[in-house]
Image (cartoon, rainbow, N blue to C red):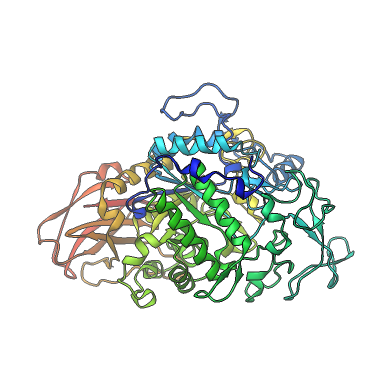
Length: 619
């Protein structure tokens, strides 16, 4: 294990062939998983990477009767809730054994939560509390396990994007706060609160393995590899802003200089984006992440908390990483930024920094989810991809490969203190889960599945833990269960989504085509865009993808209990009156192969029937 960045032998690491980058990232289907919550490799009665049913293992497949088996008493429920705040047990070997599950679903790129070594004294199972930037946390396995997992993914044609953190380290030192007495509401006691005010705080010391800040806060402290922070370059106090925690998350420069709760902000440098002077800390981070690319043959990074970094720092990092990866033959290494806020901010930041794409969180997630639930007008979602004035580019060009689109994630910042997966609350919503995944997969942007959605996970609660269920069961399983895994390839959602993704892979129109929300009509005379009437829209929502001279028509039905009919407009110039569109997919298998006559209505239109809570594709 290297103790210093200077010990890395890049010449040896880079002297080999690397897995090639994809030609077009818009062709990919992402799957985002929290490693601690995905697989521990102990599941039985599921398929291995070759599709063979396994009989070994100790954890049985979840059955409907297992729903709630961990919360039948208040004591059990308390234990289940407590387990959700701790390490659950998912690891790299478990993920390696589930690559076939992802491949058969149609996934072509996995986004893995951070694997780096965490501070010992806190249960930062999510991976965002880094103590050693050059090691894998032992809860997850070893560096060799990471390399093996990537190799297995590549053997199955799946790219691997690693979640990384530039903004902060873990809780690697403790302050000696000298201002802001604050009352603890739970105990009534007062304490010194190190909250941001623009000034630095004195520091007690680096934290030891047990959390005791007894290690001198100096450049060369005597510390073991489990103490303080590593590699040794990160012992330099100048690497950290030392200005205390963020209190106002919208105040600039507070949200850039302050600590993410107890995670310690790293000082990247200073200056505007065009004249940014990088710090030693930023240069060290670049070297550390170059190491992981070369060591494990990674294909991309998801860069955490980009909003909280100076744009100049992000630009420096993207330039260094892109140059390095092009030099070793990964011509299209992808950098995806987590940029909270609206599209204007995300677009502006991508243009300034050179990041390849942004996560479509916030307005995209909200409008996508509520469209399918019949609570928002469809035009609000589709207009997100048509605002050429905003992006100063062709209406469709920027969004096809610059936005990674998902409807659920591990934070759900947009939902405040009540976290809830799409399927939470009601049977009505569970009926619509396939539709939201189909809409996500077949509209513009790079689609991303949040783990468990393909099994209709329904977690909800007042904290992040409730939307981070353990797919493999353990003590914090999905559906308020324990000791039951959910790798069910025979489940309805898994099978149908797999079929939809197979069509996406086959049809370039569904991956790269322009898109148009279509007008509908009940009488074939009066046409308009579907919209919410009262408190709910129960309607056919149809859209087209067009590429070159081909149109594919797609539609969902937001009514969970009744089939819906509508006349739907199609492109006037691409079709002749009397020609047909053929059904290539429907949730009602009886519609497969049926044809729709193209008639002269509102230009040209077809009469479409969509099953209850159904999805159809016509080409």
